[in-house]
Amino acid sequence: MDRLRWDNIARAAAVVAVIALVVAWPHLKGAPPRLPPAAAQPVSVEDPASPAAPEQPLTRPARRAPKPAPARPRPTRRRAKRQRRHVDRVKQPAPRPAPNPALPQPAPVRPRAAPPPPSAADMAAREFALP
Image 1 (cartoon, helix red, strand yellow):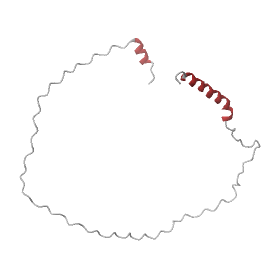
Image 2: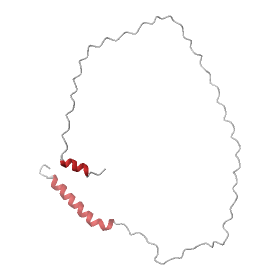
Image 3: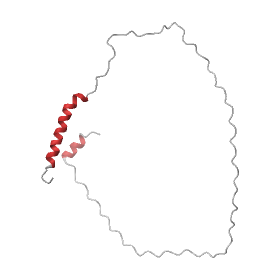
Image 4: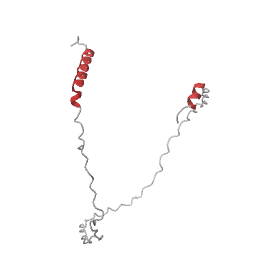
């Protein structure tokens, strides 16, 4: 297995696959679509003088009977609420957070350097650029 050159085997397999595709290509093409018959057929037009189907007057559908009211669910027993016992407690003030040590000053921000002026090629590219 160490002496096999896998890149050569892959190339050979690719060549075999391409040859198989070339051979099978005509068979992969489906049947041509069916066309209508070549003979012309006249279009049938109904006689406009003949009476059309009589129109039926619009009527409202009959009303449905109202649905009966849904059955009420059975009442559930409620648990008695627990009464809180009043206990005299002395509220203690919340502990204060420790003071923060002095923070170092942020580094000064240097202004950015101005961009270089555009070259003639840049100006021409902007002039003829599409929006």
